Image (cartoon, rainbow, N blue to C red; front, side):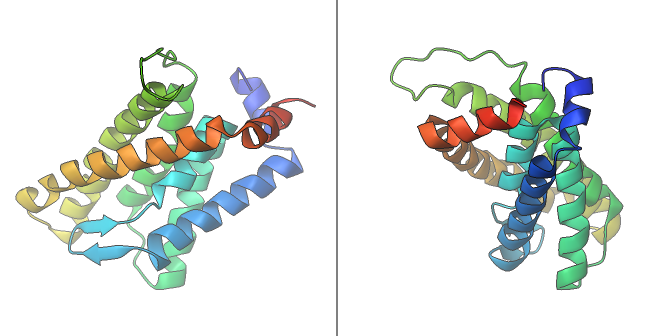
Length: 186
């Protein structure tokens, strides 16, 4: 899955499609069922499965998982579909997939291997997808005030850090990493 041709080819693999469906379902559960919502804030890990789809399966898969999870999740819970927020969810998967393979793995003293790369990927992804695009959707569609929306910045810094730690822990698991490696080989 190093180039766009192999990423597109992997999307035809039943295993990859099954994992994408599972990650979309997890995103819906984390974001709509297990979330805490107060005004413009939703404390949830709905983006974690979307980030994982992008980072582990590639940018096209991440984009699709984000879009599908947002649309189906809104329909299930009864939220109106906000196309800007849906685009933000897709952007989270797309950007995480594009960045993960391009950000170097910085060796850091006293940090788990890959944590810095994962954190940079997640942080940049949240800045674009959650802090800019989704916040614009909240302002344009729901008329939230900018000071309210600006408070999403520290929220996503904390959530993103936790997500990067979870992804790093998963990747440090030998069994999990071996299964990811099997997805890339056919």
